[in-house]
Amino acid sequence: MWGQHGGYLGLAVGIIIMSILHIISVSSGSRSVQMIERLGIILVLVFVIWESVAVFRTVSFSQIVNWHVPAQSKMAVGAAVDYVAAFNLAWVTAGADFTRFTAKEKNATLTPFLGALLGVVWFAFIGLISTISIAISSGVYNANNSDPSTIASKLGLGIVALLVIILTSMTANAVNLLAAGSALSNIFTKLKLKYSLWIVVLLATVVTFIPMFVGSFLSAFESFLDYVGMVLGPTIAIICTDFYFRAHRQYDVDELGKVGGKYWYRGGVNWVAIIVFAIGVAFFLGVHQLPIFVNTIGATFIDMCLSGILYYGIMLLIDRKEDELCY
Image (cartoon, rainbow, N blue to C red; front, side, top):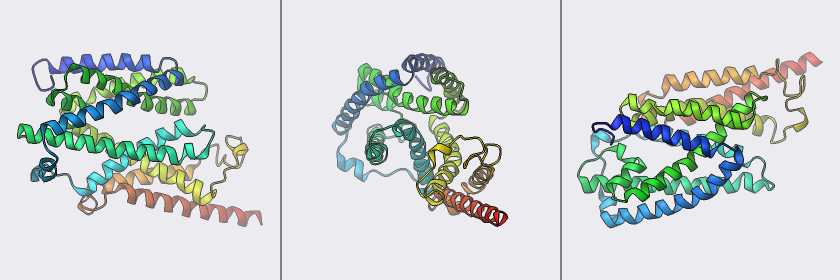
């Protein structure tokens, strides 16, 4: 067990086993991922219902409602906003890869939005009440107890629940791996998706060992979310600004990827987007720890707004300059 003698060895073995299972789950590309998802979603629903029943058998709803986080363990409001924003921004990009080829527009927009909203709210609620129930029953609050395997162990759900967690982890990670593999294939167009998936699994395996050296899974996860918010905030802001405010939701599909075409910019690179992205990252790094952001609304959404405005303004100036040259 983590924190006990031999705990590091158990974690290392667990990481290796999960990595092997991940390779198996993505071995046939998107088809094997689809099969894992169909099985996994059923197991996820079973597990959260099972966990909910176990929680309310341990403590009452009134006990959960009346419980308060110890003052020294409270998270600042702005930090919480940044973490939630980063977590959901990551799923936006992953969901886009899964829904872009759907036959109906609603299946690519409204349906995944409602599904993701339900999933995030429900699972956040389950994690919240489970962690609180452990704090009430044990008399000690530890945010690291929010880990599903820890919850299953301390609620006495048994080995079956732990096996379900392994399978549901494969489900969640299959989505992440497919999104990462797809992105890698888009960058290196000659690289097949199957091989891209194998590469990202190996890289993910290396990254998975990081929490062992940090000493706290929660701290490692918070650092990861900071990185996600820092990178995806400006990226998504630029994408949305370009699509909704510059292209007015109408891209010329035939021009995409065309050498010298409408979207070729300079040598195939939109340098304005790259520069604005770098500025957005620098801004986040500079302000996200400042009290004015940590204690209020966080830095992620401010960063996104500024990145979007800056990108739109610079591109507008460039468009006007090009129009003047044409005349």
